[in-house]
Structure formats: structure tokens, C-alpha cells
Amino acid sequence: MKLLKTIFNFLTLFLVTAISISQTKVNGYLQYSYLAEFKDAVNETFTPGTINLKFSGSLSRQIRWEIQFGVKEMNFNKFLKDYFVEISEIAPRLKGLEVRVGQFKYYWSIERKESSSERKTIYRSQVVSALVADRDRGVEVSYSGLKNFRFALGLWNGEVVYKNAGTIFETIDYTRNMDDSDTKKDLTLFASYNLK
Image 1 (cartoon, helix red, strand yellow):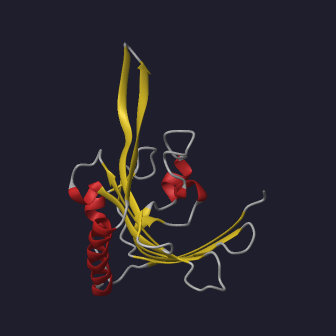
Image 2 (cartoon, helix red, strand yellow; image 1 turned 90 degrees about the vertical axis):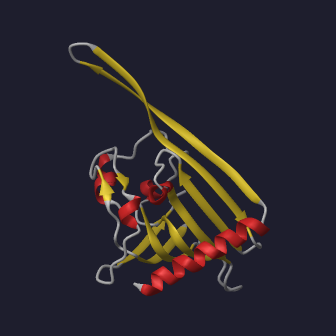
């Protein structure tokens, strides 16, 4: 869809400008997995699970941006995991209303939305890996102004392609995720209530 490509190009230009004029925060994390196989002989290996590097900043109190790179995936299309601009407090009477545009994890599953740096285990459950999409390009409007409630509505590119689908090693094939199709778009609606 030409509109999505135009939005992507505008967002890229916006983020490059944002990086140059805002205070940039840099952080990242590294997770390694230990695997021991006891067959005929003991085979032990350490493999990198996730290696991410993130840059973020604010242009104002209401506008924030973020870019996250997957350092483990060195091909450019796989390397660029997240890139988005988030605008909050759009309407003064609607506290908690946010709009996010770019490529990022969207609200569909609480476990999938949780950052790898905050999870207690290295991998997500196999059920979530098999059934829930990870990241996609699009626009999402979310509202968290009611106590303990969160609502989100999103429109997405819909061309998410996975490697090792349905396994704990599943990752997005970011090379294919840059594809665009006018025939397949996704619409998501998310609602959650925190019992605390």
C-alpha cells in the first residue's frame, strides 16, 4: 500500500531528525541460553538468545520516539526491530490516550508485549509463540485513562513472516516483514483489566 510506504518514509525522516535534536538515551540487553544434551556424550553450549540495542528520546512532553536494533541479526532488514513515534495526551480531557506509528509490538497478548529484559524465562511459552504475532508496521491508538483498564485499536501491514514458527526459537523474518500487500491488512482490538 502506497500510504504505508509514505508513512514509513516520513517516519524514517522524522526519526533521523528527532535523533539529531533530542536528548538520546541508549540502553540494551543481552541474554544467553545454556543448553546441555545428554545423549551418547554430554554436549554443552551457550548460545545468544537476544541481543538488543535501543535508542530513545523525547521531542516534547507529548512526543517520544524509539529505535531498537537486534544486534544478533546483522542483515539490515532483520537488524531494525522497532522504530516508532508515540504521541500522548492528544486531547486534554482524555488522559491516557496515545497514538503510536511505526513498527513495534502491539497489544494482542500480555506475554508477547512483555519485554525480553523483564521476563523471568529466556523464551516465551510455545502457545504464545505459535499463536500470537510479534511486531508489525502500523498505527495503534490506546487508552488507559480508566482505572485498571487498557484498550487498544490498531491497523497493521499484516505481512508478518516467521522463521521457526511455533517453536521457542521463533523470530520474525524481518527481510520478508518489509514486504507490503494491498490485499492483507490486520485490525486488532485489545482490552485488559488489571485485578490489582
